[in-house]
Amino acid sequence: MKAPKIVKKAQAGFTLIELMIVVAIIGILAAVAIPAYQNYVAKSKFTAALAEVSAGKTGFDVKLNEGATISAPEQVGLAAKATPTSNCEFDATGTTLLCKIQGGPTTVQGKTITLTRGDDGAWSCKSTLDVADIPKIAGTSCTGS
Image 1 (cartoon, rainbow, N blue to C red):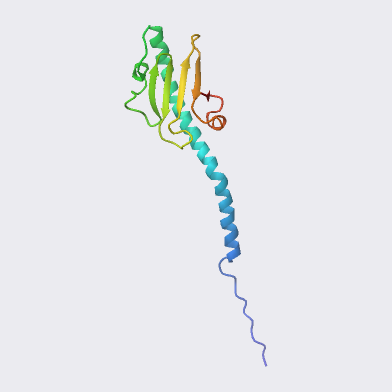
Image 2 (image 1 turned 90 degrees about the vertical axis):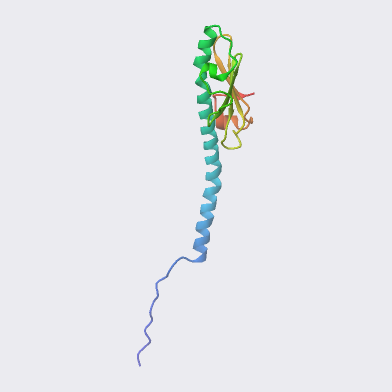
């Protein structure tokens, strides 16, 4: 009598535990990556807004040297308050340029960047970002107001 032939079947697919481990690893990576990405987007939005409002400093200085009184952002080469850009709603008065950030994550949306020209011609930057957000979003470019 012949012994029955044993056929070994190859494993097909993944076990449930293997799939659960992969899902757990993806969940952990996402939990770390999403906040880091949101900080990156907020920092990018803030930097873009700061660059836009900083562009008005030269026009501002020229107008002051000409003896003009600045009362609107379009006088210094920025977009009019009624027509904001995708990053800023501008304002300009006296010795300040102001940008109210448009769009972006809630950490920067609606916050302001205020550039103030001192009597010595030096510019300072202040922002209404939350104090805890200033180091990771604005870095050393702006301080809190």
